Structure formats: C-alpha cells, structure tokens
Length: 219
Image (cartoon, rainbow, N blue to C red; front, side, top):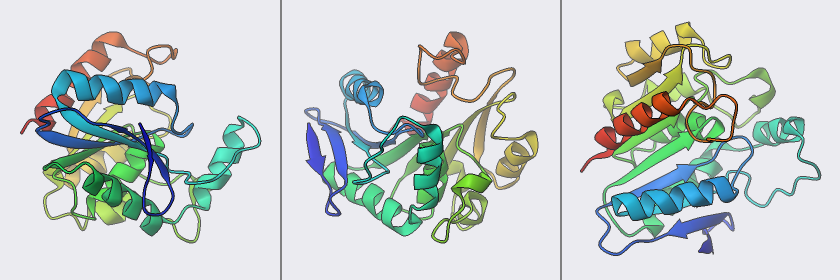
C-alpha cells in the first residue's frame, strides 16, 4: 500500500505478519515503479520481512522519460533530506533490525545511508562509489567519504560486476580497502541482477548474488 513519509515523500509499504526483519528498498535511476513493487512484495512474502520502497525523487514530476532529466534531478537532491526519508521509512516498519538495499542510484544511497548508523546491514547493488559528474550538486556528498566514517564497514555488502562502466576496478579495490564486503562477478555489467527483462541480466550470477544478500541479512 502507498503511504507518505513525514516529508511528503511517497513510499510503498509491504507488511507481513510476524516479520523478523525490516528492509528499506531504494530504487534505481528510473525510480519507484511496478518492478520494485513486485520485488518488495516477493521479498516480504518469501522471507517474512516488512519491506518499504522509497521514492528518492520526492514530489518531483518528470515531463519525459528522459534519463538526462533524471540526472539533473539527482544533482538537485539534498543528501540530508534523502537519508532522513530513509530513516523515517525504517521507523515506519515497526520491526527491528532494519536493513537497506539499493540498486544503481539507490546503491549509491546505500553507501551514504550507512553513515546514519540506523541500519544494521546495507546492500549496494552496483552503486556508484564515486559520483558521476552529472550527479554532483551543492548538497551531494561522495560515497567513499561517508563510508570512511562507518564504524563497521563489514555491515555493507557491495554487489558489483567487473564490466560495470560506472564502477571501476579501482573503485572496487577502495571498497575492499575500507573493509566493505564485496561480491564481485566477472563479466557482469551494470544492472545485472534486479531486472530480468534487461539485456544485462545474468540469471546465474543474479541467483548467486541474492544468495549472498540473504546470508548477509540473516538475523
């Protein structure tokens, strides 16, 4: 069901009876849509979790489906506002512990939200470790800077492919140096897990990645 966070940001809540964990899901660049609603519903039912999907763009209304329009909107986001929404979403689940998983843009915000210390575990699916130039804005911080302030970086799992054009091998090495847990998939490109209809999807690697995520989030 759709709810509003305190800021007015819309979110999709998927409660389940007797949940043992909460999970905040942060979508990719294209934002909240049926793909993530279906993913959240499946996670809730299959794993007995309370799940909530948060719209990073708040009340922004896009005139087109243009990716360029979304890149511009990202540069205008305020990290403090976004993370406040993610923390608010975690509190709405009324269960502990609460983890966060994000994809692409959401994966970048998984790194940033780690510094809030609200989440016991975090999963970043191919989140950008360094901000692309078109995402940089006055209220954006670099993910690596925020990860360096996390007391226990092993609470973060990074799922990445070695052929990702947006996450370089040196970026991955820096995550390892910071003690982030890294699940690295040879030959995989950006977006290889969460959308089975995408040409980048790799079923075997995706299945293995989800297995690693479930092990990381076990209570």
